[in-house]
Length: 217
Ligand code: G3P
Image (cartoon, rainbow, N blue to C red; front, side, top):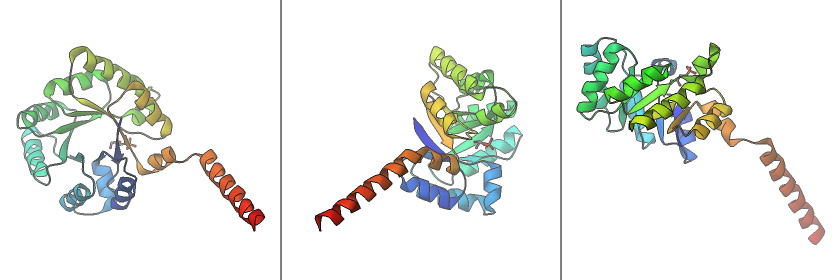
């Protein structure tokens, strides 16, 4: 499974990328606004750090404007993927962009039927928001399972990005289902690395090693 980092924070992107396990980055307007930086410059900087797809979202909701915005964003860097909301004008925009060879990440997906339409429009990626479904007492991961089955049934090439991940169990479930990608916030990513028994084990090795050195003297 590919792992993307879901943030627009440069320091977090740099640190995660240094681990050597990051395949791409996803951002959204909320994450970008949090950084208080110029959007184009920020996307450019992210692309200079991570050698993989970097999703940048359009703000327009109307087909013509969305298309203009998407084309402008795609000129920032060859790795920019255009994030488009799953609305009728969005699907129309995705269709045109896919014909032009511009990669898209269809976002704010909350049902498998929406994901079916995104794939039919030629989306490169689909982003089901599982955490936000869990928040309203729907099992978010169920739609990932459904999307996976539907895409397999019809041979769609659209890759599933499990988004709105909140904790390590979401990543585990995504991997068990066979999702193509999990996009993980920095804090959850660090929790994947950590295990208390690893830390306890290291400390025990250090203590035993130091005891041996004292005995040898
Ligand atoms: O980037 C899209 C998605 O991952 C947002 O997550 O936590 O705001 O629901 P969240």
